[in-house]
Length: 437
Image (cartoon, rainbow, N blue to C red; front, side, top):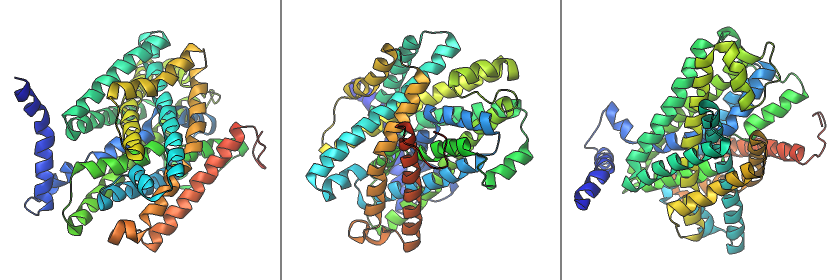
């Protein structure tokens, strides 16, 4: 009986893996073939729709209307480039980013990078775990600690599905991404959106004042997530084993298309967050900056249904991103130090800080902000490593970055890391010329 159940559980992944092999061998073609390769970028895209983005986007829309939409667009383009590089690294070399760090960098540096990356994984999970708990608490009137308990149980249950192979977990995460997108599609229908202004500000760079620059820095500086860069290289690495460079080129093409589509959806969701906040709060409620305040303010403005949809999207975001964060943490540990720990232990370790934060009575939104500061400190580790490894022909072979891609990646890294530096300086109280103290 158990063997039959095991076979049934693995059959979905086995069928997908076999079909992928048929496409790579040239025996299967057609539009449906592209769907076989969908999954890694969808999972990675959750990093761009996690609860940490909610507060920043709400603050941007409430305070400045549609003005900062162009920042979301630019941030998403940078994210596309780096996620594509991460996926290419895994496909071209068969090893993920953390493994390359272990293989090519001095041992003391590897241990430091692992420690920093583990802290980043916990900070990531803090934001995601708290986001789901806040949503459950507000939607069902639960104490925050109870919401955390439910979030922990649900995420652990989803993580157990990973034992059945890569396809079931991809479908679950994909469904949650679809739910988030559907929720914001509903919000766009309900909210009184000025679409002309949306189109204009999406392509017209403008920073009204120093405070707007701070928010723009927050949007861009927190866009490229450390764990997403590690994770994407591993997801493409483990999916199938190409036999030659022709198959690798095919996989890279499919991967690039999926990155563009998946992160376009994530970008549209982030834009929708700003648009919703701009439409609902900018006139008369421009001081809305916290998730809880946004929910309570939405109810009288757009109705209980709109406020409920907002919370459903937050819960889906928190649960799915918490699952993905735990997967990334496991991959980081295995890549840097070469061993795995039971998923329950991993889950307990990454969610422990969230329970400590709530137990100490720290404001959840403040905790979200602090988690972004930690991520800003950790981001240079994978970002710089990714640029350096993907430009090396001795590692990538014919898949090494072209001069144009190298230039774009370097500019993107300098921009994101510079803005992260501004975020950190502000967080630690250092004055920055032109910005409010």
